[in-house]
Image (tube, rainbow, N blue to C red):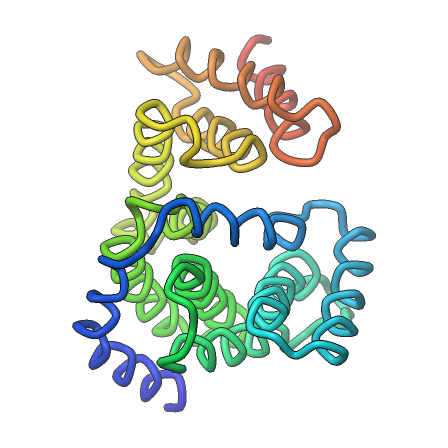
Length: 255
C-alpha cells in the first residue's frame, strides 16, 4: 500500500515536474552524470561491496544532496547484483534504494538536473522490489514511472531508457507487453547517440550495443548485431562494461 500511495503522490506532481524538465541544462546533467558514474552499472561484485561501504560512510560524513543520490544508486546496484543471491545478507536493498530516491524526488528543493537519475533508478528499484517480494503489480507501477521519466528526461539523459530497457530484457515471458522495450529503448539510445556523441558515455554504449545484439541475434539483423558487438568490445578494453558478454555472444553467433 505504501508504494501505491507514493506512486499516486508522484503522479499528482507530474505537471510541476514537467516544468522542471523544461528547465534542465544538458551540460549540468552531464556534470552530475560524471559525479555519479562510479556508482552506476558496477558488474564487479567485489568493487560493488567496496563502493557500498564508501558511499554509506561518505553520506554519514557529508549528508549532501549528491551523496544521497549516490547512496540511492549504490543501493540499487547492490539489490541488482547481490540481493537475489541465495543465502545473501543483501536482502532489502531494493526497498532502501526506492525509499532514498523517493525522498529526493518528493523534495521540491531537489536539483532539477539530478532528476533524470533519481527518477529512473527509483523506477528500477521499484521493479527490483516487485521481483524480490513477488508483488508483480509493483513491476507495472515501475513501468508507469519509467514512462514518466522518459517523457520528461529522455532527451537529455540516457538513464530512463537504458534502465527501462535493462529491466525489460530480464522480465519473464508473461510480461510480453513490456519485454518489447528491451529493443525499443536500446535502439532509441543508439539513434540519439548517433545524433549527439555526448549523449551517453562509453560504458553505457558498450552495454547498449551488446543488449541490442542480444535482442537481434538472427535473421536480417545478424550482420548489424555483429558490428555492434565489435563496438561493445572496442569501447570496453578493461572489461568494466559489456565486453565479456559481447565476446560470449559473438562466439555463439559466429560458430
